[in-house]
Image (cartoon, rainbow, N blue to C red; front, side, top):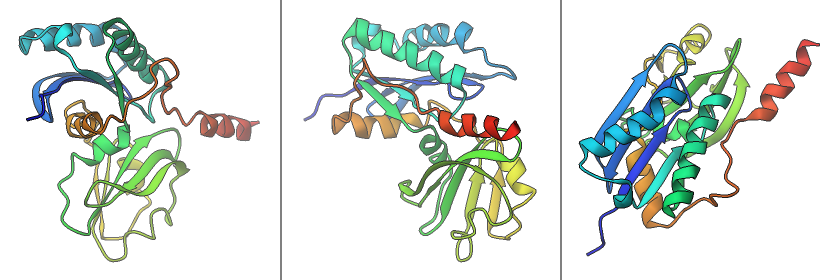
Length: 229
């Protein structure tokens, strides 16, 4: 019988500072605070210590650390990744990355054939988005895009499509097809990271701790700045 894995999960891609600990893919403890402004630098390490204490564990009990890789806030992602890499170095643990939009998709219960599109608000009419099927695998890769009335039209004609996340409100204003279902209350959370990270753990899909960087979609931001000139 395979040994159980104790995993620490850090989610800092948006305003939700979220930490969880899981045994395999079962959540033991969840600590999070979705503040109106970013408070990760003050809260993240406090939440990590509190979560370990509530689970009656120590850092030495951990088998791996997973980090939400983005896209998302540049500052938030850097804080989370720096913390995760520091712990991995000091404890000699493997690092697992979890796509932020994929963990958001797991918050929606899908029937066969349905789709979910997590969308994070960028600026103006821009969002970070990815399309997932009912098995929570990518149907279309992550993109930074400007939302218009034709966005996601290829997916919505024959099935329900859930548009979730902080960018859902701006999508609601332009996406008119009745098969779209909007929910702007969904935020990235360390709770949904557990099952994704555990799958990567057992298949040894680890990152190189020294060279791993978050997925900023930075090129898109720079491109938009050029258009202002």
